[in-house]
Length: 227
Image (cartoon, rainbow, N blue to C red; front, side, top):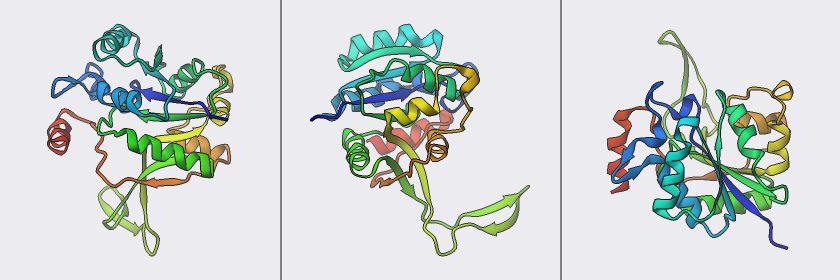
């Protein structure tokens, strides 16, 4: 029996803002907003059956226009998120159908997303219970305090940066991000939430760079890599 999989694209919260006035997802990269690249990848991915996108209240109409302009037919709901990521996740998950088995979560500030990577995290999740895109850190990683070296962290182990997309069981995400705010913990990210739920992250190595846009200066290198 086919397992239903939806995408949950997060385009709200501090991680998705360059400043209080500038939202990363709505900066223009080439001829379209940053958010459109992620939505296009999910829309083109054959494993994705539906998409929920979470945005700030002021941007909901802009996303509706984006959907109509680019023909993102798989989008099921445009949801207004909260002030914190946990609240935004809870709001988005509330609109994911109950028969959905897996949810692939992605941060809109990473526009260099390919449908193939989405599929790889889904394939991994079906086999192992989760699928987390990850980039190996090739250089030495150290801990420092006020610019002073304290210790080297890697040693004999290989270190990885857990990025997005990340595919998790819908039931585990809903439990981690309940509707009622009083029952919800403000996890810093979904990896922390799933570890608390005893879900073991299974890494999916990324072959190509997946840069995150954190400032206007990041637009140029992302654009160069896209070309």
